[in-house]
Amino acid sequence: MLRVNEFIQLADDEIDMTAIRAQGSGGQNVNKVSSAIHLRFDINGSSLPEFYKQKLLAMKDSRITQDGIFIIKAQAHRTQEMNRLDAQQRLVEIILQAGKTQKARRPTKPSKSSQIKRMDSKTKSGQKKQLRKKVDF
Image 1: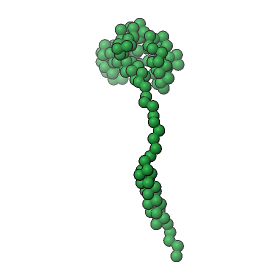
Image 2 (image 1 turned 30 degrees about the vertical axis):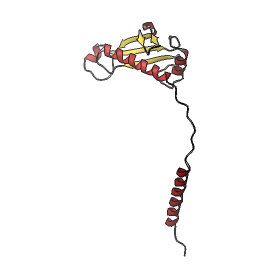
Image 3 (image 1 turned 60 degrees about the vertical axis):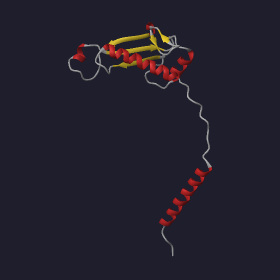
Image 4 (image 1 turned 45 degrees about the vertical axis):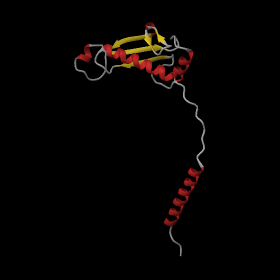
């Protein structure tokens, strides 16, 4: 049972984790031991609330396939157990991030003094450029 927050828990059968061989350096150990974890999470077939499912599927993330399967590859650690915990933690963070709602943006106007300062600086730079011109006698 993977606990996302106090309201959401994912059953172990919803998360498919397989051990694969890690890439990169590591000497002979990398060729013998399957220490990396390949986590697959089916968003549509999960027990997540519909709000979370829609937010996750709407994310522009290359780890989400067209079928709605979220794939995480964890290979940062040397042991399989540490990579398993890392993959689960990353999944929880992404689900929590999807659940956050952005604050609505209130359109604002620049203040009167900032408008005046901007116009003054434009006038000064325009005068500076006028002085650079060739002088006609």
